[in-house]
Length: 469
Image (cartoon, rainbow, N blue to C red; front, side, top):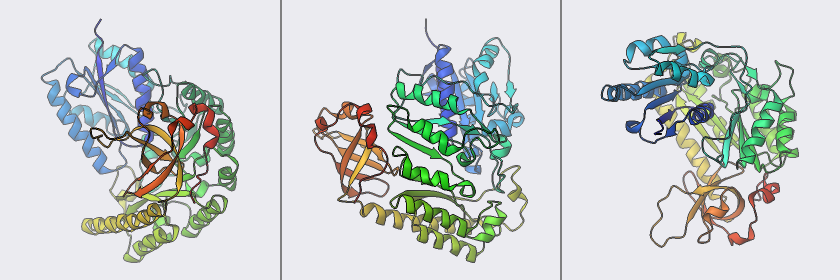
């Protein structure tokens, strides 16, 4: 019997990647195979992001193209999932002829049921109902036989912070946490299937469990840390206002906790932070950074910035550049401000000129590029412990030794040469790499004889702090 083929285009954050994995599992259980070509697909799903206007425009462009293909392949089923689906459900079905299913952020688990109904001639179907309950089912590890070396687990959904620029509370709902035993069970299942690094996901993981009276986030980390076979733990995203001393101390007491934290600041100006409704000051943020570095002096800190938030003056922007230079982030993500439906900042009248937003964004990125280059060049000659994920994306020339890729505890990409015929055996292992060269966004080096490394699970204790000089 010939299986139907599915194609999924995933945009946006790690939570969308996680939700796509859940959809893949359900589709595999329903008899679907997967293809990397939407021309060959019987089912096309786009899992969408609404955080910025550019991401939404990508959705429109993709749907226009796929609906055009459907006119030549009328049996093709087209579905939209994620935040744009939640936000614009009715408009999408009116605008794109051929769209069969609109699946909101709380409706992912109902995908197989709706595909059955569409197969019976129903459609278009819209489900954007938002429920207070969170799905506690433990998904299968992957649609293939093994899990990825590094994978995601959602521990909570939604957000209660209502930052002035953000649509998340409106498209993903209010904050709700999963039970710790369910999360622990999912992590154990993934590790048993081959995962070695787990990233815990939430809009604000620091407030995990508070509303429900569950264990605090540092306790959840400890429970997951004790799982045998797990080499490394990461988490995103941390809201600075909720970064507690107990969570900071976890970086000292949990060796498997990666030597990296993503701590979005958004602006270096107190006036702008107040307008953003971030509920912390520049001084508060700097205090959190100092406490983190007191526990782990070499911790890598990444962050987010918005360039040209409404009302941002030259003085405010100068404060942002000053903060970047003072903190010396390992890396950052920065974007021009854009109005979003339902977000309060859309109603702010004092918008920054588009050309000025672009200039400020470029200055943020250039300033950080200079700092990142300095940090990376300072690592040449050190030894970094790397979790091997697989072959690097760099093409291999005839006769070249294999080049392997992985990440250090600080979340830095490291590409390195390994002994011939050892690349497959190294996947999922923590190995020491001698850094010989710094690139713009990665490091390059060599490793000693791979035969010195045993099975992946047996070296899990090497996770945690780097041994960089």
